[in-house]
Image (cartoon, rainbow, N blue to C red):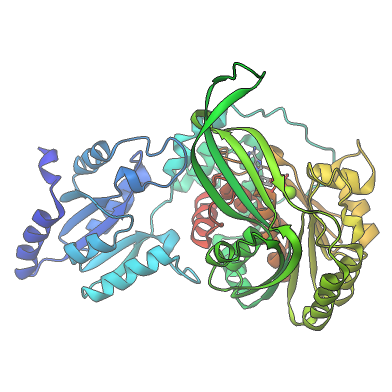
Length: 544
Ligand SMILES: Nc1ncnc2c1ncn2[C@@H]1O[C@H](COP(=O)(O)OP(=O)(O)OP(=O)(O)O)[C@@H](O)[C@H]1O
Ligand SMILES: [Mg+2]
């Protein structure tokens, strides 16, 4: 019976047109609905109350872009579960990657999204196209205000429960006070078992309970919206991340090696390019100072992979390629087999460096925040670090320790740092201390470089942020869904640096960093930047 509701879009459109002629109001919702849950049901029921007929269109399998192994349910099953709901009148499996074509065919009076899409400072391009399409057919966009859940988090609960909760914690003066005690009647009970309750570790739940008692969703979203007016500069090495997916063929008869066959390739704009793209989602105007190779510069690719509000200024290293890190992946399991770095990481030729230092000298004071993504591949010398420290009004720095720089690239290269954002291994190398608690190291670094804030990212143990008041905010990871860890630290830096520059309270900075980290580990390498809409959605989800 309910399957009769599942029809081709054109058939549904004809029936809706007849209903409209007799004055009925048509409501349209669109989504992936991979694992239909109570959040979806409440959203659809609320949408139906806005009109007479509710049509739901479903993202087809080939356009579900939620990571490996998704969708968990085929488009037919997803449509069938929707059709079984009393509030749903018609279901169609869409054909395109967005709802735009479906909106043009359905011609709804109301196109309805969840509250997590409401009041975005700048709707993502896909949503904007949908809003435009609704306007063109004479309809309006509306929002429901029901509890927000996440299918992704729910689908990952099994993995999450497998977390190692025995991860070491530190003895520290952290502030988790003020939050209500964790109890079945606690903050989340009004909306039922929300996503955070299902997807978070005990530590995360405790942190979120405390955080909710100090800050509201609206405060966090207002803080993020305030970043729009900042002028940001990102500086660091451009890196092309290349993936070559291969199938092992077998052992060569003449060598002791396994031969592989390449099946596909993928390239991402990484390093400072990725950082600038992350920042570009939050700050209105982003400038990028970076280095390309004089040979095989890949400038076209680089330009094509920057957000429109990121303006690059390239300096060219003659006789070298643009830094390319080529990873050979074992295709079926997405495991890295080995990596080849194509680069010249000696110091920049002095004439190129002089040109860059002159440029920086003249332009740095104009920025509200200067974000350094220093990979230690020869672009930023101690002289450049000194210029940045002398001229930037607010300097945020990450210095990566990696296989190529062998721990020679330390944050202490910068005479002054306002916000240091580095991982645990990097801070231990920088302050030469292998065993002390991370918070103690952060205090030491703050003293050494006069930082107003330090964040130490700690992979699956989350991150710690501290400021001049000596309080350490320890934020556990907010999601257990990990597709790829690479680039998570860069995303953390890029999203938190403008927050610190804008004067956001440091516990909120730590929370926003945790949200950025949770989203970054869902993205394969630097395939795409962190989208503000996803940040808004996760903020809303975990704080409700
Ligand atoms: N295994 C994980 N599980 C959950 N979250 C993670 C995991 N690894 C990283 N994260 C998230 O990403 C944030 C930053 O990651 P991490 O500490 O690994 O940075 P990093 O070592 O600088 O990484 P990279 O240099 O590759 O960008 C963490 O604070 C956390 O929020
Ligand atoms: Mg890092």
